[in-house]
Length: 294
Image 1 (spheres, rainbow, N blue to C red):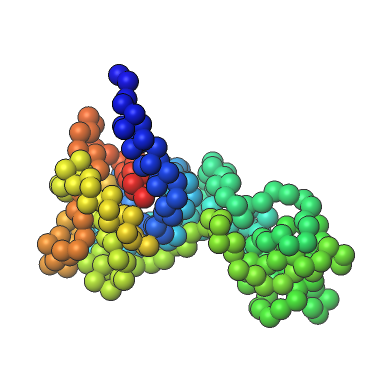
Image 2: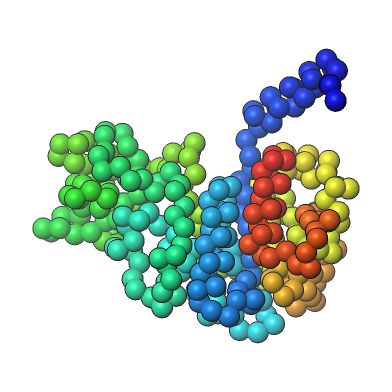
């Protein structure tokens, strides 16, 4: 089917508008029962790796892990946290920052994130920005920047501290404290959160999206979702567990979706052909749509 001149002009304008718009900073919230459908540490590791990859692909700012009060999931929280943080840490800093833990037994099967601060270059030039870890050498504070020799550190800090540095000299190798580049995704943070109800009531996100199979059809709310996504500078996507949706999580504190009238309650997979959509699949699917809408 051929498009008319007016339709082509409209399409070109929409594409231009899309390319000029900056995506909002997005965070996701998952329950500490995220592994409730996995019986083995290997399975949990694979699932966590897929979630971390989705977070990296779409530049997620924070991964919040909130409490599912149906029972004690603290062990699974620790597992998720350790794996998420391990994957976000540049490979050349892992020996200094991450100790051997049982939760990381299958870390070898995790896919690399390959995000901007996971650099592999063995050479550094003046002006380069990268992650570093401070440590003491010969009574002086130096920075491990991933080379054979540490950099002289021109600044203040504590041994064992991870910081962002800028290379200010190559001979001798010298680094100073810097801010991450604004035009590059510099990793995500992992944060503990209380129950979903308490977390949402205390959060300051201008746009909340509650995802659920029981939510409103996304196709019927497309224009509102698009306009609100483009207007927000930060948004939070909330997910339930493999066993229970966000509505059940809210009921744990005697709350309901209607208690958050400014949030959108959406079914992102209204025509699914499978009995369930796995959490890791829901995350990458929802982030894909929000990224496109923005």
